[in-house]
Image (cartoon, one colour):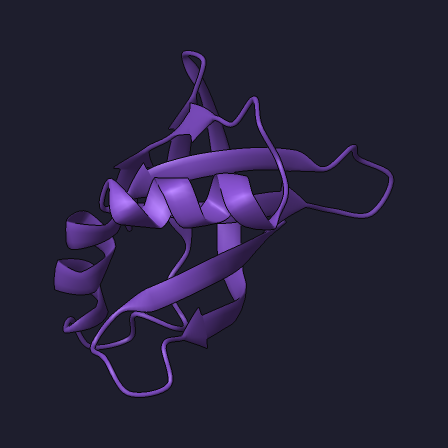
Length: 94
């Protein structure tokens, strides 16, 4: 099980996400049935390094947000068209 520390995003939208990516952070969202969506940001380098591990896409993640631990799985990842960078990630609550 992987553990990732995240921070809640205040600003949302295309320009805010671009500013995050310029600072080497990755915009993400956490959602689930009957739950409110939570917009978060996480360090891009941590996720790129975890992506090389086997079973990365099948693994359950522990996300630490405001001292609360959330159990999530990856729902969708958007990659940059030609760079080795991630653009956005969706997590779904378990």
